[in-house]
Length: 260
Ligand code: 0L1
Ligand code: MG
Image (tube, rainbow, N blue to C red; front, side, top):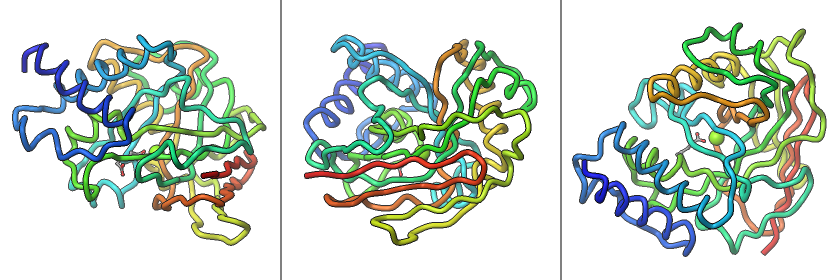
């Protein structure tokens, strides 16, 4: 795919995100959008954000649960880029009027103390982690009727729009990251329960896989970056008035409010 075509597709997903416009699948008009080309579109769309003053603050893994992979008919997770416009303080509000079809999912987040470059094992990846936090990710696909292929969702930066990190940061050293129970509540009622084992078997494995996927594209993670390791349960649709909270064993809670 030519660079001009990459830039055109990046413009489509970026303006859909800025204007909250539904779009059809890019692959309908661009059947030659391979996974590699889709990551180029993703980077080109994030370049547009950077040109507007945003900064890259981390990366996210998506489609890390067996359930989501089966739903999409894929065998490997995907990654996206987190920018400074996406982070929300613990307990703060997001405006639903700024989003299109928002849904929320509970996640385990890492904050890196060191650069991390693949290939690495999960244990090696953990050596670059400064702390672990509870997190909530808001995903917002603009694709009409949630119909998209893997290259479509990669090109659209894996639906990344907002996320919150809990206020507590726990050292990874003694945590059994592969089996942390979690409960997600909306307005005090439990809506999902799960375990960190649903995140690619273990969030540390997800982190290592991210470093390894990036290495295959000549990229790496940097000290200070945040990594969202993937959703541990189904994603729940959001509406104005919701107060969503996740409580995760050993690492604490994260909360977000939704206002009109
Ligand atoms: O965070 C993720 O698992 C990415 C989800 C992308 C697909 C969707 O919008 O449902
Ligand atoms: Mg997610």
